Every structure is written in structure tokens, then in C-alpha cells.
Image (cartoon, rainbow, N blue to C red; front, side, top):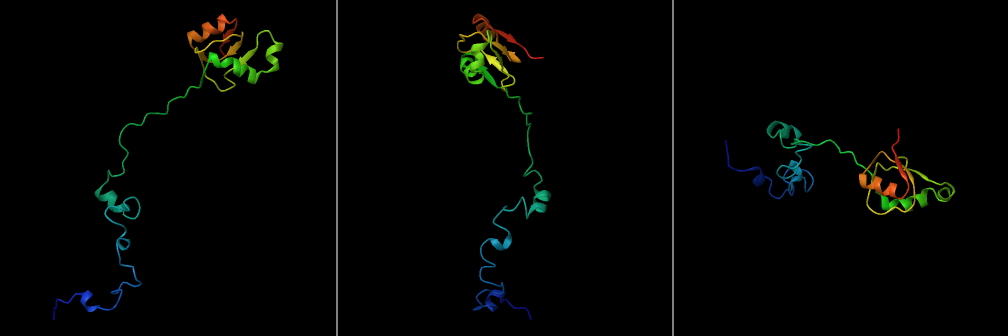
Length: 142
């Protein structure tokens, strides 16, 4: 005969009410977390079926830009002393290869007092002006 007595009422005094060790049916651990927790792992099938766009990437991602490593004419004297050292005094026109040192462009900020022969792939008009006024020249590598 049907009756209204629920499982809880039957299990009064049993401490765990048929759920094994203490704490197995407590809080949210028994059901995989609260709300939409676990949508990326243990509820993935549900996510794919009912919310297919939840983790979709949206929009345009631009290709990575080429990073140009530049150096100013004002920093060249210090660089020459550091790189060339004694060779600088020996030759009439010391040669500085900026491409081998990892620089792509020569900019025109600052002053240059010593004549240099500089190898660099790109440079500004102001940089060329300052190097030539100091008695040097810029050579583009092949």
C-alpha cells in the first residue's frame, strides 16, 4: 500500500541516511559543483549540447607584428666603446655592424661626435644626416 513516509523519515538516527561515509552527500561535491561549474571538463557533453558557443573564440586575432629593435645615434658612441674597444682607436673609420648586434633600425635622436661606418638594414633621414655630419657613412648589408 502506498504511504507518505519518505526515506529520510525511515532513516532517522542512521547518521548518514544511506549515503556511506559522513560528508558524501553534503554540499555541492556530490553533484559535481554548484551551478555551471565543470562546464569545461565533467559536464562537457552538456556544454556542447546546450551551450555550444559558451567557450567559442569570437573575433579577429591579428597576426603577430614584426618587432623592430631600434637604436638612437646618441647611444652609438657608448655602444662602439663597449663593442670595439681598442679597435676603435686603431682604425681611421671604425666599422659597426648593427645587424649582427641585433638592431634593425637606426634612429636620429641624440648627437654623434665620432666618425663611424655603420652597417644597418634601415635608418631614418635624420640618422643619416647626423652620421654624415660626423664624418661617417651608413652602409646597407647585402
